[in-house]
Length: 110
Image (cartoon, rainbow, N blue to C red; front, side, top):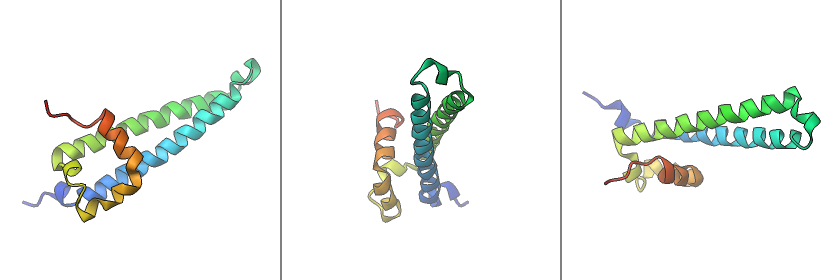
């Protein structure tokens, strides 16, 4: 039986890291908007401020879900040990995502 997860791990991983990068960008924009609105007490009570705060939390949770999916895919396919293969060369463009994954989510051999 064909293991499609292992066969298409590069495509799945690329979708995950692309979404993580997008979510990171959106979270940063929402955080900047939230901080800009928090400059005085009057702005903190506005809908724009609380909408930005909710967006920031939402995108943070989406990023965490993405990293957990990377970890699950790594458990199934061991893609992190195969980064030297040509099919994973795209990860060079996602160095910050890979570094964060290695620091916080990658399973350590004990």
